[in-house]
Image (cartoon, rainbow, N blue to C red; front, side, top):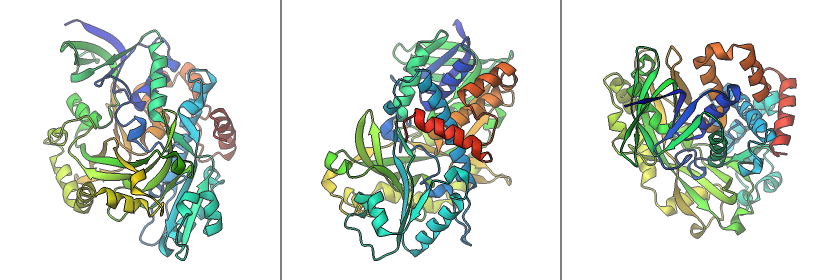
Amino acid sequence: MTATNVDVLLVGGGVMSATLGMLLKQLDPAMTITLVERLDHVAHESTDGWNNAGTGHAGYCELNYTPEDQNGNVAIERALAINASFEVTLQFWSYLVEQGIIQNPSDFINATAHQSFVWGEKDVAFLRKRHELLSQHHLFAEMQYSDSPEQLREWMPLIMSSRDTSQPIAATRVDHGSDVDFGSLTRRMIAHLEQQDGFELRLSHSVKSLRKSKRGYWRVVVEDEKSGKDIEFNANFVFLGAGGGSLPLLQKSNIDESQGYGGFPVSGQWLVCQDQDVVKRHSSKVYGKAPVGAPPMSVPHLDTRIINGQPALLFGPFAGFTTKFLKKGSIFDLFSSVKPYNVAPMMAVGLDNMDLTKYLIAESFQSHKDRVASLRNFFPDAQEKNWKLQNAGMRVQIIKKDAKGHGKLEFGTEIVAAKDGSLAALLGASPGASTAVQAMIDVIERCFKNRIASPEWQARMKTLVPSYGQSLVKDADLLKQVRQRTLSTLKLV
C-alpha cells in the first residue's frame, strides 16, 4: 500500500478540526493538511446546530460556571477564564469576516441576550451574590441584575407571562450575548479550506489504526467506507477532534498520556418549538439552575435559536443514559472503551456517581407531558402541541485518574497531547465549541512549539487574535479594544 505523506491529519469533521485547520493554514499556507470524516458530510455530530445549545458560552448566564460551596461562597474564576476564552474565539471569527472568508456573520452568529433566571429565596440570594462578584470585574461590568417583576417582564415577557410573582424571583442580563450555529460556521470554514492548495477533505473515511513509526511520524490506516479500500497516510502530526469518537482513537494510539482515561456517555434531547407566534415572543437565552443530582450539562435553559437561518425555540436539555459515544455510534462504544488501565477509575466513578446514573435513567423514561411540565417552570403558558422532541448530540464526559489513582468524573474539556507533540486529542464537552479557538491555540503551542516561538508565527498569530500572549482577565483596556472591534464586526450590537 502506497502511503500519502501529509504534514497534518485531522480526524473528525467538526468545529475543532475545522478551527485547527483554519489556524494552521493561516499560519503556514504551504502546510499540507488532510481531514477525514467517517460520515458523508461535515458538522453532523455534536457540531450540528440541532445537536448543541448554540450558546456562545461566555459565562454570562451559565450558573454552573460559578459554583457555590456549602458556606455560600461563590467562585467566579472559571467564568472569568471561559469569558476570556470566548473573547479569543470572537477575535478569530472577526478576522474571518474581515478577510471575507465568511461573508456575512449573521450566517452563523446572531446577537441574543444572555439571561439567568431563578426563583426561591435561596437561589435569589445566590444570583444576587454572583452578580455582585462578577460585575466588579471588567469582563462582566455590563451585567445587569433585577428582582423587580416589572423589569423582568421587559427582559423576558414570555417567561413572565402568567407567572406567580408572590415568590422571590430574580434575573441577570447581558445584552451582547450570542446564539451560534456552529454547524453553519464549520461548513463555511471547511468550504474555504477546500479551496486552498494542500488541503484535502475525505468524507466517508474512518480511521482503522494509527501507529507511531520509528522515524517519528504516524502511520494511519483509513478505510474508504464506500469502496471498502484502505488508504494509508504518513502524518507528522495527528489531531483527534472526533467528539465522542476521540477517546477510542486516543486509545488506539497507545501514547503514554492516554493511560487511565475513560468516558461517561450522556445522551440529550430538546423540546423544540417552531410556531412563529410563540418564537417571536422570546428573544434571549435564559438559563436556570440544574436539578439536584443532574450533571452540569443538564442546566435547563430556554433558548432563542437561529439554525440554517430559521428561528426556533429550544428547551432542555433532557439528559439520558446511553452506551453510545456518538449519535451515529454503536451501543458497544462504552464497553469497548474499557481497558485494563482504566477499568478501576471507571468502576470508581460508577460507584461514586450512582445518583447521577439514577438521574439519567429516570430522565430517559420521562413522558412528553413530564418534559412540558419542566418547561412550564420557565414558560408557564407552554402548550404541549407546540413542542416536539428532538434528539441532541452525544456528550462523553471525561473519566481520569486522580492523584490517588482513583476515578474522577470531569465536566469540562481537556487536551491530551503526546510528549513529543506528534498527536493531540480533545476530550470532554461544555464549553467545547465556544472556546474552540483558545483550545486549538493551546494545541498549537503544545505540538508546534518551535514554530509558534518563531517571530513569523508570533506576528501572524497577533494578526489572527490581537490579544494573543496577553491576559484579558487582567487587562481592562485591552478587553475594551478587543470587544469594541468584535461586537461591531460580528454585528452583536
